[in-house]
Structures are given as C-alpha cells and as structure tokens.
Amino acid sequence: MENEKIILVTRKTRLEGLIERYNTREQVHFYLEHSDEHRGERGSGSFELYAREHDIYSEAVRRLQDGLAKLGRLQVIERTYLPNYLFGENDLVVTVGIDGLVVNTAKYLDGQPLVAVNPDPAHIDGILLPFSVEQAPEIVEHLLNGGAQTRLISMAQAQLQDGQSLLAFNDLFIGARSHVSARYQIHIQGRKEQHSSSGVIVSTGVGATGWLSSLINMANGMWAGFGGGEARLEQPSLGWQAERLIFVVREPFASKTSSAELVCGEITPQAPLVLQSQMETGGVIFSDGIESDYLAFNAGATATIGLARKKTRLVVG
Image 1 (tube, rainbow, N blue to C red):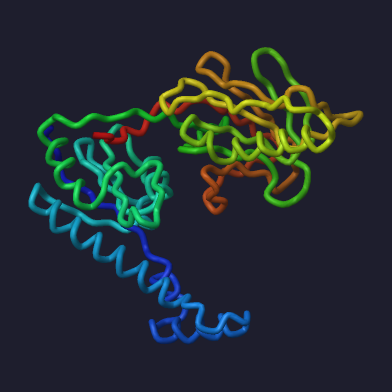
Image 2 (tube, rainbow, N blue to C red; image 1 turned 90 degrees about the vertical axis):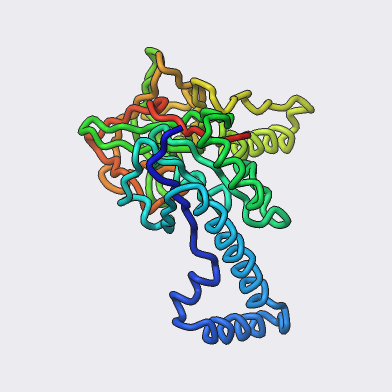
C-alpha cells in the first residue's frame, strides 16, 4: 500500500504521570515510600514496581522506533495529542500500550489500518494487542506490501439534534453526571416510555465483555440470590463486526410517572435508539469510561444512538 507515514502512538507511564505531579523522580520515590509506610507496608516496593514498568515500556518504545524507522517516514505522538492530530488518509498507525490506547486511538481514525503492539506480554493480557515488539516491524512491512489481514470493528455513535456527536469503541453511557436519577423518554421500534433510572448503557461487540457483562453478572447474581433457581441469563452473542448494538437501562424505577418495561434490546441500522432528555442540568453522554470528554444532555436535547459509519480496521496478521 502507498502510505504517507507511519504514526507510532505512545502513552505516558504511571511513573511519568507521578513525575509531572511531584516534579522529580526522587520526590516520587519519597512520596511512594512514605505512603507505603503510612499504610503499614514498609518495603512494599511501589516505586520499584513503577520504575520497572517504566523501564520495560521505554525500552519497548525505543526498539519499536528503531524497527519502524527502517520501513518509512516515522512520526511519534503521545496519546494526549490525539484530539488535535490530523491523520492522513494513507497513514499507517501503530499503538504500543494497553488495550485502552487502542480504544483512545481508534476513535480518531477513519479507515487507516491499526497495528496494536503489546509492550509487556508478561504483565498485559492485551485482548486487542495481537503483536509483540519483535513481531511488529515484520507485520508493518507485510502491511506496506499489501499482504496483512485486517479485521473491521463496529463502533457506536451518539448524535444530538444540533449535530454534535460522540463515538464509542466499547460503550456509551447516557444519564446523569452524579448519583441522581436520569430522566428521559426512550424510543425504539415504535415503543416509547418515560424513564427514571441510573442511565443507559450501549455496548458494541468488542465492548460486550466489559460494562455489559457486569450488568448481566448483577442480574444473574440477584436472580440466584433471591431464589430464582439455576437458570441464567446468557451473554448476548456479539461479534466485533456485528451490525448491532445492545442497550441496557440501569436500575429503572417504576412509578406513577415512569415505567420499567423497555429496559434492554438491540440497536440496528434499521432501529436506532432515541432518547429525549428531561433533565434540567447534569445530563451527559460519554464513551469508553472517559467522563471528561462528554456531550451535555439536558432538557431539550435529543440523542440518536446507532452504529457509526466509521469502523476500526485492526490488523490481525
């Protein structure tokens, strides 16, 4: 393939984050050592753990840079710069970090292939990270020659009536910012209800093992705990490329003005989910657990939830 450049996306280590907060490596060491002592954990090695993690990651990035620089024009960016970075149509993107870095990066791409690298397979499970540092340059070279295999991953999108939108790789949350009831009207496939709940979760196929799975675990635990027998609610079968999403309403409250029957279902291209906010203030929509990046969802706002046009093109071999 004819590419513009190879973009390597990195992330700050926990140690780098602490150094930004406490100014120097020595002050971080002092802070962690005294924090351990305060908890009665003298010699627990918190600093050594962070330092070892930092060293392993830094070495992985260095080796990856060396390998990728031999294959083409290379640019390295740290993930905090993603919102302001313009990817070229023919760029090839490589991430090195945890699964969350893939999630962060994917929402800023539009069809560019993404090679996800696990910098520390001994300590990072990496469901979305098929390649080691050693494998990555060979995979990228294979991709540049048009031979790599990719897998499309469906994403969700929330769009407001004023045109604002938000993508989700794993899931969307629509509800109230604090621990108060979210009030809204819900519409799907010709049905509608007034709701007072803890919010709505919308899950993609790749996110189905996360927040959605927790909701199903809670439902099964309550069913068993209250004597419901051995029957269990099965996890919805969603592939990463599935052209459907799953929505679940959290803790719906039934009252004279709110119902609790339309509480879960599928969202498809033919049947989007529509929510009309009835919250005076504090209503939000955020994705993938990042509460700081949100759409305001207050009275007068209507959100249409469906499949995103864009898909993540993850390189798998």
